[in-house]
Image (cartoon, rainbow, N blue to C red; front, side, top):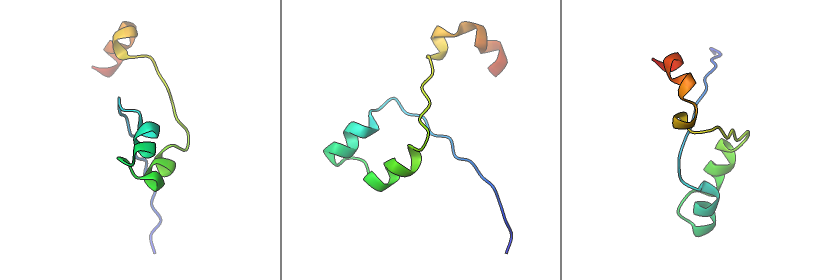
Length: 54
């Protein structure tokens, strides 16, 4: 058996919690990906960071 590490980053502009309540997003998947939610400002509000991404 080989051990491996991976990470999966997710981003969306949709309200997934609301989608779970409406039944349009899987509840089990939401709780798996919503372990540590991170909220950041939009990149257009952080123009000084743009050179870092180029």
